[in-house]
Length: 215
Image (cartoon, rainbow, N blue to C red; front, side):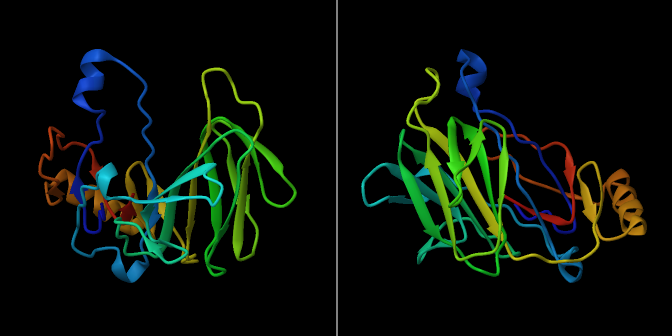
C-alpha cells in the first residue's frame, strides 16, 4: 500500500485463525516517500503467497520469497514508489546464504523466529532482533545448528532501500517532513478527506495512514 495523500485502513488476521486460533505473524513495514511525492495518489496492492517469487539456495537449505523489489535478477510482485528490496528467508539449521545486494541500498535483517548469525563476523541474532549491515555488495545470514524445539528453522526478513536523507516528522500513523505538514494531515483526517481501502477478501478498513509506502 502507498498511503500518499492518505488512506483509511486496518490490518487483521485471517478469519479462520480468529475462529480456530493459531500463530499469526504480522509485520508492518513503513517506507518513507520523498517530500516531492508525499501527496501522490494512494495505491493498494493485494499480494498473495502464490504470487511471490520463490527461490532456493544451491544446497536447498534456504527458501527465499522475494516480496518486493529485485534480488539477483528476480523481481517480487510488490511495487513501492521508493526503491526497496524485501525478502522473507527460511533457513534450515546450519544453512547459510550470501545474497547479492545493491551497494546504494542499506541492509537490515529482522528475525521473526529462530537463532542465527549475520555478516562475515557471524554476529549472533535471535527472535525479535534487527541486524544492520554495513556497506557492501552482499548480505550473509546463517542459521544455528540447533534451534529451539518450537522453532525448527530460522525465519528472517531481509530489507533494504535507497536512503532518502530528508528530514522526517511523524506522529502515530502520520509521516511527513515537517510539523506543519503533520498538523495539516491531522486536519485532513478529522475532516474526512482521506480515502479508504475497499474491503478485500473479508478485510475491513480502519485507522489512518498518510505520506508513506507500505509493505
